[in-house]
Image 1 (spheres, rainbow over the protein chains, first blue to last red):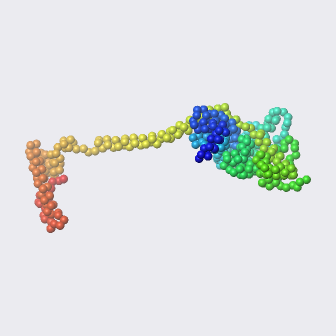
Image 2 (cartoon, chains in turn cyan, blue):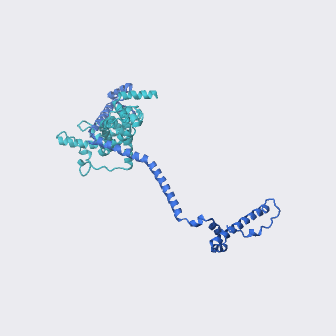
Image 3 (tube, each protein chain N blue to C red):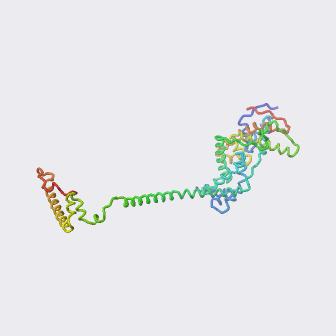
Length: 216
Length: 196
C-alpha cells in the first residue's frame, strides 16, 4: 500500500494532468471545467476517427467526461492521466462500435459525393493544378482513407488511432486496451497490412512505380 | 542481387514495429540489415510508411464552441436523478404508513357507524338486561306490570335464579365427580333454567 501510494505521489508530481484530476476529485471549483477544456479537442478527435460521425463523436466525448466525473472519488493515479482517460474512451467506443454492428446505421451520403455516392477509385486522378481541384481531391482522398479505416475491426482501429493520432507507444496502447505489448504489436501489424491493402491504389499517386505486392 | 524471400508474418510485425520506433537493440539491427539486403523488404517498408502517411488526410474534428458548457450542464441531470432515487424509499415508506393509518381509521369509523348497537337505556339498565335473558312469555308479562311491581317481580326472579344456580352447583358437585357413583337425578328446577 505504501509503495502504491508513493508511486501515485510521484506520478502526480510528474504529470500535471494527474494533479488537475486530483483537484477534480477534491471537488475544487472550476477544476472539472478546466479538465474538459483541456482534453475535449483530443477526445473529440479520437472519437471522430473511431466512430466517423462528428455529432456522435461529440456525444461520446461528453459521456467520457461524465464518467470521469462520476468516478472521480475512486480516482487513484497509477498511470498517466491521459492513459486512464483513453481507457474509459476505449471502453465506450468499443461498446458503441459493437452495438452499431448489431444494429447497423445507414450513413448519409457525403454532400460532395454527388447523387451516385462516393466516386469510384479510378476517378481519383492526381491533380497538382488549381487550389479548388486540390481541395476536392483532398476531400475525396479523405473519404477513401475513412472507408479504409472502417474496414479494420474495432480493436485494430482503436490501436491505429491511439498510435497515429495520440502518439501512444505500444506499452501505453496495451494499458488502455487491456492487452499485452506483444498483442498490440501483432494488432498494429495486421491493421497496417489491412490498410495497405485497402489503400494500395492511392499510395503511389505521385507517379512512382508501384512495387509488387508482397506474397501473403 | 539479393535472393527474393517472402516476408513472414513475424518479419512484417517487426517491420511495423521498426517503423514505429518500437524495435530496439539486436532486433532493430537485424531488421536494418535485412532492409539493406532485400529490395522487396524495402518496398514493403516504403509502402507501409506511405499508407501511414495517408491517414493524415483524415480531417480532425473539433468540438463545438459550446462543448464545455453542454458537458457541464449534463452533470446536473444525473445528480438530480440520483437525489430523487435516494428520496424514493423514504417517500414510499411514508405513503404506505399513511395509507395503512387511513385504512384503519376508516375501518374503525365504519364499525362505529354501522355496527348494531343497543339503545342506551338497555346498555345502562341491569333490570332490562336481566329481562332480555328471560323467556319471551315471562318477559312480556313482567314488562306489562306497573314499575313498582315490575321491580318487585324482577327481584323475585333474580332470587329464583340465584337459588337455581346454587342448586346446579350442588348437583354438579355431587353428580359430575370423575370417580363418583352413578349420577343422580338433577333437581327439578334445573330442567328449565333461565334462558341465557
